[in-house]
Image (cartoon, rainbow, N blue to C red; front, top):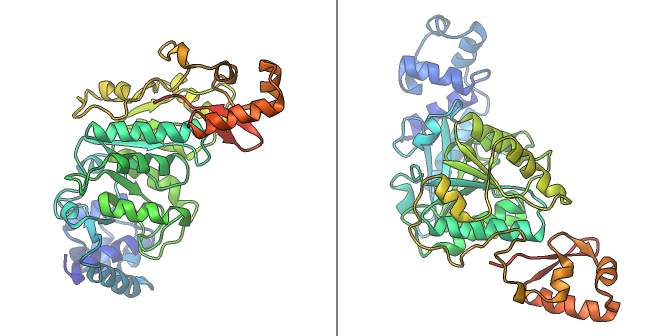
Length: 387
């Protein structure tokens, strides 16, 4: 779009009291935003309230500054780096799945490979949201990584929110499975800030990787800081562009449950991975399962439910993520059997095994170096399921 058209879209999003629903009604009546702003206040009052009509006829204070910053952001993209774009409701690149939801944003800012932004960057019917706790257990983070790697290997794009914990692990798993520049995004990160910012800063390198092999998405204007209210709101985009939402770990008071609820409201599938009855991070998933979410133990469970054939076998193949008979008993040492799959203290292990504290620490360290046991905060240890 040219600068004038971009400015009109930005002005519409900034107009006081004009939400997405009212804006869509005006667009349906008048066409492009420029036509809305050509109307008299009296003409606008036939379709909106008097206060809304006055707001549409007044130029927002920060409009010209945002227009200049956005235009410069688009024009100054490094030709050797990620491309940038702003897509609106009328753009062919706007995700069709999101248009079918109740509250699609008027416009979205995108950043990703130029080849991806030149076409339709949101693969229709081939997206799966993977969300969960910002403070997952070691097993939860590994599940998010391995499920995402397998699902992307089967041809699905992984959608998440670039948060710490499960979100970051999901993005990383998809990127690990990607080979070079993808025909479709390896992963899509829907963020709660302007795209000229990265939050949290610890995920800066991950955001750069996503911009080179996937897609960064925001509905928020450039310069928008990480305001708490923005993150639950952006969750409707995560679920809206996806066929289903997989919740890996979540506490009962979790933003991931907001995403799951929105997915249900949008007519999408919801999946949940069960976990330990003793882990707070599993209670949200168990609640979802009681409410009708599909219990999944492997990536194949998700693919079968979505009737999505595996395009390539997951590598490595994910086995069940909970203790079951599928795990070979000969692989279990007495210490692994004593560990179980719940977090446990060294003192409790001494009591279970009868080992000396010194010998126990030696064997735990060996298992930790082998990637079979994780050391948790608070002096706890947890066995990791094999993959």
